[in-house]
Image 1: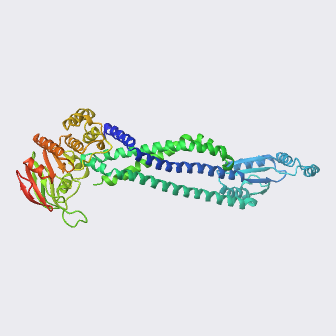
Image 2 (image 1 turned 30 degrees about the horizontal axis):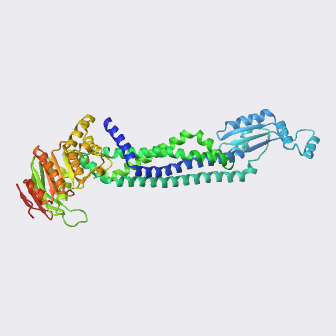
Image 3 (image 1 turned 135 degrees about the vertical axis):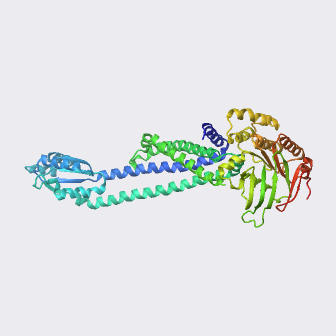
Length: 307
Length: 227
């Protein structure tokens, strides 16, 4: 194809877009709905991921060490744990720190504090708080600690208990919820996007059906298929681009409102999220809209260019 | 130049043949009127010649090219050698008069300079110079048909096919269209005119092929409309 042809095709597409005012308007509206669905899904995923992330952070496995376990041994285990690929973070709390924390937590409970003072030595052992990357990995980490691999270098047992087994039920349930929510989210996303894509495709197909006689005339005049199809595809591209702009405009006040009123409920400030990811969101909707417009127009014109 | 050999066309689900066992030849520079009642098969001949329809049986030749066996790309090339005028004008509604003609030139791969110099000229020729930027819906029937003729001749085609070009026109416009077609023919272009307008055919005094129920019943060198 020559450069002049491309220039003419692009100009033709723009002229069609402007001159077919009502048809263009309806197509842009339908595509805006589709892109709004896409944006809404992206925002919902952000809320879902944020909530699940927070939930996951609240679950950890704590290793309680025996009183008198040496700090170097504990730190040695910490290093080993940190080297495991499934571990996100390991926090060491020394027995002194544990005692401080305990006192702080019970600062108003004089009875407990008094009882504590009666004791000669610190009754609390050191702990390691372990956060895994995925909730499903706690079992493996707990298994690693139980198996004694962590203690291979020094045979003395310094681990008092690992609270994973106490928390197993909660962790298992959390894993199920996380996986379920992800699967459900993916399913809903797929169905919603599929429906809106079909509606947009049919709208563009209808536009081209209206222009089928025009396509026939172009063929009789001797226009090649790409020259007939090109402007329709450019028009589809413009629908996508304009709709992406409108979608971003629509979501601006929505994100403002959500940020101001729903942050506590959702746990995440969607207005901040929207602006932090504005260009990514625009790029996703624009590319999605442009591809949808181009592919729909390509497929819809094919039926009239076959003969 | 154009040859129909034993051509039969039966449309799917139609049962009867639209045209049956057609044999005729049109020489370069001829002016041929194809006449007959509605449904006699005139438009089918035009569609077959343009490759819009394929014959059920037989062959159609444009010079040595077998039209009925052409693939899409080559058919496009053939169509550029033929200018067509239709009863319903078949203009592009979202393009101005100027753009309708320019589109035919663009399709033929002409440069912007050629388009800028030729389009105003041909619009003047059909007396539409002042309406270059009107859209088809802003033109009268006669003007639309003149525009359609301008588009048909802009690429200097070897053949102009006019399918019932006067069907929607009043007598004055009919006369004008026939006059333009005769002029085109006098400049050496082959013209094929299908019509059921007796007055038009009788005024031309050229070859007339008469169709009845899809068959050729007369083929006269200087014929009249006789059915």
